[in-house]
Every structure is written in C-alpha cells, then in structure tokens.
Length: 425
Ligand code: ASP
Ligand code: MG
Image (cartoon, rainbow, N blue to C red; front, top):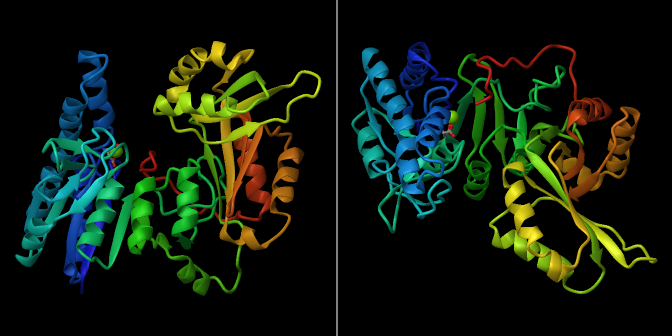
C-alpha cells in the first residue's frame, strides 16, 4: 500500500484530548498497512491569538517576524502530536515546513510553494516512522527566511506534499463530514456531496464556501491528486474531490445540474457615481485599484444616460481593503472627474455552482425567480460557465441561500450535516 497524507485542522487538535484522538486515528491508518504522513494546523484558535499578541506589541508587525511568530503555532501541534503517537507505541517524527522541504517564494504572509523536496520525510517513512509536518509554512528559496502560505494554508501544504510523495490520496480532516450543498449552519437541509469535481470545488471555494483553501484545490487539480474531505470526529465517508470525468462516471443515475450554493459575507461594494462616458475612464479607475494591490471581484458598468453622458461603475472587493480602495479612488477625483464615491459593506454574495449548467438553459431564470419569490433584491450579477453569482443585501444572504437551495432541489429531509467542533476547519 502507498502513502496516505492526512491533514488535521485546528478544530481537530484543539486540546490534549483532541490531539490524543487524532493520534489514535493516525495509528489506525498505519495499522491498516499504509505509510502515513500527517500535516497539522495550529491548535484551536492559536493563530488568531498569536496575531492578537503581535498587534498588542506593534500596530503593523514586520512581515518577517509575524511569519516567524505564526509558524510557532504549528510547531506546537506537530510536536505534541508526535508525542501522543509515541505514547501509543508507534514511532513519529515531527518536521517544520522548512525541514520537510517546503520551498516558497519570499512573499511573507502569502508565500507560494515553488518546490517540495521531501527527502527527510521519505527517510522517516522508510524507517517505518509516521512523519508529522507543520502546515502553512515553508522557507524562502531566496532569502532563506521562514514564510507562511496565508490563512488556512495547511490544506495547501498537505496537497503539495501528497503530490511530491506521489501519495494515493490526500485526506483533509475538519469538524464537518465533508462538502455540503450549502453551509449547514444556515441551510439545515444541506446534503453531503459524495463526489465533486476540482472545477466545481474551486468555484465554491472562490465564492466563499469555507471548505478548502483555494490554492490547495488548484494544486490538486494541476497534479490530479484526489482529496478526501472528511471529519476527524466520525468514521463516515466524506466528499471526494476528483476530476470531472470521475464524477460523471459515478452520477449517471441522477445528474444534478446544480451541485451547491455558496455564500460570502466578506465583501464590500464601491460605486463610482457619475463617471464621464469617455475612453480611458475605467482603465484609470482600475489601474488605481490594482496599484493598491487590491483584488476585485464583480464589476458592473451601466450604459450612460443619454441626457448627461455620465455612467456609474460598481465593483466588489474584500471588505478589509475597502478603505484603501476608497483612498486610492479619492485621489483620482480631479483627473477622472467623477461625481462621488459610494461605499457599502453590508452586502453579501450568493452563488450557485454546477458543471451541468453549461448545457441546461433556464438556470439563471430559475435562480432569479426563486430570489424574487423570497423577496430578495439583486444588486449585481456575474457568471462563469459553471456559476451564477448575485450580490444582495447582507441581511438577505440567508434567505437567498435557502431559496436557491430549494429551487434546485438540493435538500434532504434527513439531518445529514453535523458540525462537531463548531469552526468548520
Ligand atoms: N493555522 C493557520 C490558520 O489558522 C493555518 C491553517 O489552519 O491552515 O490560518
Ligand atoms: Mg487554523
């Protein structure tokens, strides 16, 4: 049997009891004859607590030192987990990201993995030991400094290692039983999805579903590494994230057009009101946003009113970047000559995702009808080949999710979704 990579999130190792429970699971997998390589996140809310600590000392902690501090969280859990496994009579060795050969670029706080050289991990596995790797961290190829991959990055560590080790599967454990047709916290009738494609998972994750780190899914798709998302609190089979062909084979019985509904409450909307309708205005606006290193999402530009020759441009962006964007745009008022700026951070985005929609007409109509029956007003719309998203008032996000979920018959009457730990990670 080959190597299995298992990743345990912070909620699975929140305290000593959790660490012991996870150690037992790992040993059970080892007993079945697999070689096991484990990636672990920081215990419970450790990362948030470390960030709070840094902010108490410095309003803008230097990125290099912040990364050094945050990586300590995963070091604690990896060492404690190795101890717990040794208590069960099995050999375990822990490794930092750097020791495990996770090589990144030098972008502190959002480093990208550029190579994995798992020599020491393979050495441990060859010796019959269970290797435990600290998630979410690596070492920069150029500066040799310790880096982190961004919040939630342990998923990406796990997939990258699984690829480098040519593992059979990358299992990602959290406190929910898999990927659901909607967030079970707001949709009680949510159903577990047995198999889902990389593409649909990417859309769901990008649209705010807190299932997997986006980059981990991109990585898995690129190298075709199957991911099994499951709970460390139950023995249930979870959700398999696989290539689209493998989903199609399984679901010949009922091929659902819509796979799931995602929502996102982390966005804000900016409207540039009264933009003169002439060449180069949109370019100037979005150049300023881009120069401020802000990633935007939806853009809507209206046709200008014939009487005034003015148009409005709205776009969404992460709420945390709202003030930076407003400041960047304010500096443009004289050159662009717009009338004023509007800012709204009580918006939310609701998306339906499904590979089947590219071949079935009427999906948007059904979605918008359901929203209208639920009294939800649509502020913006955007689509991809396998997704339709709307921006609505934040107070209407929940009704919009429920309406879409029932319009596409995604629900079940049996209670399937249990959130064991409470965080979803
Ligand atoms: N501990 C880090 C975080 O909370 C990484 C992770 O959990 O994946 O963001
Ligand atoms: Mg965490």
